[in-house]
Image (cartoon, rainbow, N blue to C red):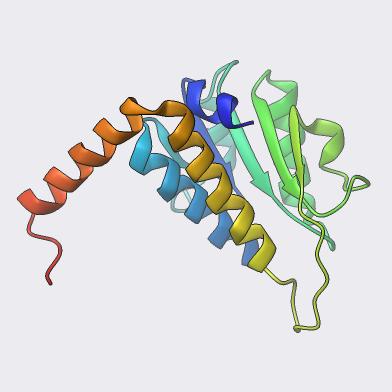
Length: 159
């Protein structure tokens, strides 16, 4: 999966509701170390338009867990049908997303919170970002240096 995220011409991420935060986190992290990464529907520009802008060989990473959101399943199915590689990050092998996955990452979890816990999913995303950076090696380091230079140029951070 890391190799796929590193080598794809373009990577988009997609989720809705509480898992949107995981899609944003993966997009931000990968965008720090490689180009052509973003949210599929950023911000609300349309999933159909986002998918239409992708090509075979591109990657769409999607997130959902029980109870599964129909819209996420439909987007994953459409991407898969269009020849876009899909990385599914979900909770169970029985997830309806798995059928449309090129790669599946299972993140089993239990929660006593009023909603699904994101802790294990955040750990998974951080691992994917770090693994992709390690795989990219010097290219990731160069991308981070370009980012740091731009942060300095724009005087974004302070001590």
